Image 1 (tube, rainbow, N blue to C red):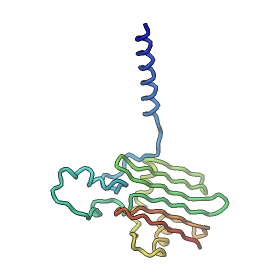
Image 2 (cartoon, rainbow, N blue to C red):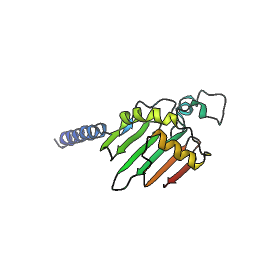
Image 3 (tube, rainbow, N blue to C red):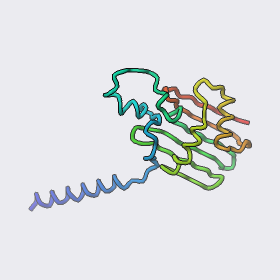
Image 4 (tube, helix red, strand yellow):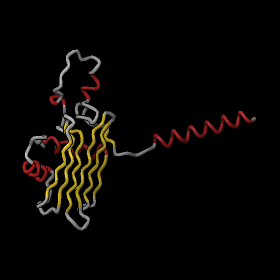
Length: 168
């Protein structure tokens, strides 16, 4: 009798744990382009590594964006911020947009769908002057030029991380 009750308890516990794990809502985007850069390397790198007979260090031609991580925080004072968080990984991207001025929060696929055409407009890289990066950010994301402070953290496709801080 003791074996049967132990087996039943373990079975019920397993069902509960599996149910809790798969029911998680997350801000992972699942419709991220296969060729978008990731924190671990491009999708091309991961899917073709075993079949690729020519080795090259230039992976930029197969990437959707020039970065794998993008975190933007525009502060307008009085707890009014506009934030973008994008981190692409091999298992999908964590994507969210928070606009306190419009009382909006978008996550996952909806956020990625909104950001993808904007990200494609960004042409800066690690060598672009800060003033040009600032101009692109203000224009592409249609940010109000009356900001108090803008912080931008970018991890470029080559692995270089750069932090920008802009004040008027």
